[in-house]
Length: 92
Image 1 (spheres, rainbow, N blue to C red):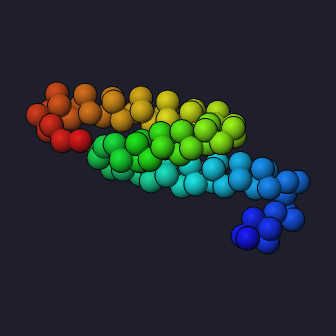
Image 2: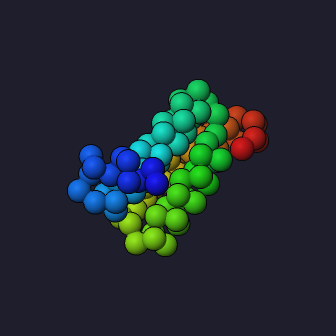
Image 3: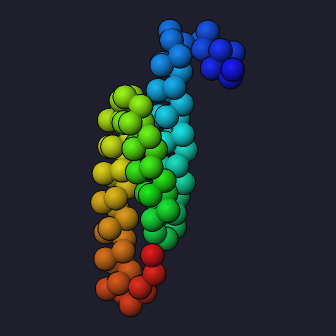
């Protein structure tokens, strides 16, 4: 029902859904960046993005933007975890 109301701004319901997947992933990745920039890990946000990617792919939507976010945040998160362990702070 919501898609019927919002979809006129998009060419199709699929475009609306794709936009929603991308927007929610952006919100989650912004939260992850905030955590990482403050010296905290973003493990939950990374897991959330992986779940969104799975749902997106299983419904035949383009998950390439989400995959890129997962790769970037995953690398930064891993680097932060390694640094924290080297400093003796072993939390995730």
